[in-house]
Image (cartoon, rainbow, N blue to C red; front, side, top):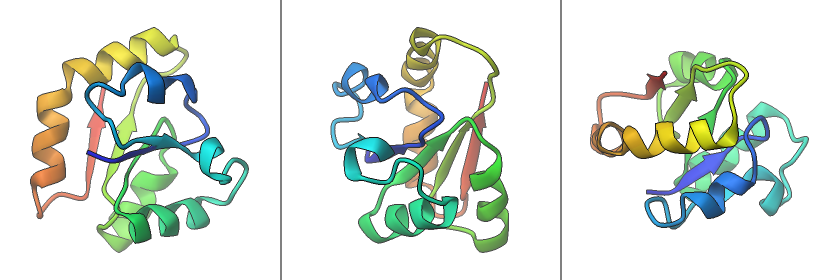
Length: 110
């Protein structure tokens, strides 16, 4: 599973989750830090990433345009990177099923 972590998430998550999401990257590491949501969306679509964000903007885009890319919305406010890491680990099966489901564009996890 290839995840593209939005800039509102720590770049440290990529290394912390490499064992379960080995092909994942953070927008900063590919030169998209500070880029528009549209540019990030287009990149994720072109390369085959699923977007991970704490922001509703990609959810809104998903409702307008469908997928690809697929989106994972982390609906938690002020929380530590460790909490996000544990959340993604605990939701691995749901995320995997979601990414394989051709009918669903977005998943919100809490």
